[in-house]
Each structure stands twice: as structure tokens, then as C-alpha cells.
Length: 124
Image 1: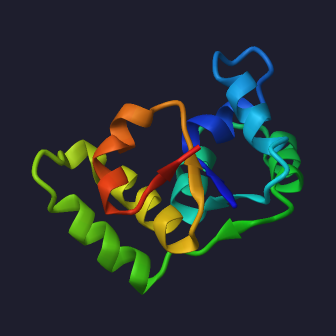
Image 2: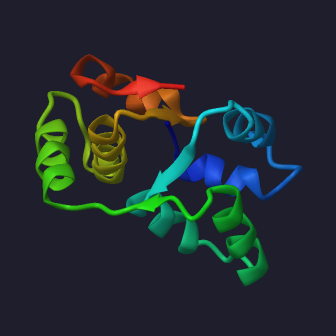
């Protein structure tokens, strides 16, 4: 399974977005593609027309996965890693969700997630 980070959720529905090709590559990988509810929250926080939100739901086959206690606990541990900044709080949540789902995270911001790779995160 592949989880799309917020930046690729946005890019998936915008053919002129600089990361659109990466989003399409993930969507066409032959693996199931999902988003965790944290990335989905960030995506829905942007001014996106309802029709595009619905189109993305269809592309994801409605696989928007919940964020629960286990994800919260792992994200808390990731947040405590040396060098993790306050700005990375949502990144730790998205990383925790991917780790626990056994999913590779597709993102245009691989450097932001690199500190979590030694802790089980796989990048697409």
C-alpha cells in the first residue's frame, strides 16, 4: 500500500502542479493507494472545490484511513526524536500512520520524512 502525503493529494488533482507526475506515478503503481486522515485534513484545509475533493475520493477508492490511539502514541515517540521540530508535528502523525499501515509514504518532501526512516517509515 502507498499513502499519499498532503502535497501529493494536492498534486493529484492539479495537472499543472510541479509534483503531479509523482502523484500519478503513485496512483498508477499497481498498489492500493490511501491517505491517512491527518493528510486528508490538511488537504481539505485548502480551498479545493467540492468536485475535486470528490474526484480524489474516487481515485483513492475512499481509502481515507483513521488516525487513532496507536498512531498517536507512535507519532509522540517520533516527535521526541532529536532534531524534530514543532513544525514537523503533522509529519510525525502522517509518518506514524504509514508505518503502522505498512505503507510506503509518497511525498514530494522526502527530506522532511528522512529522520523517520530508521524508525520504520518506507518512502515511495
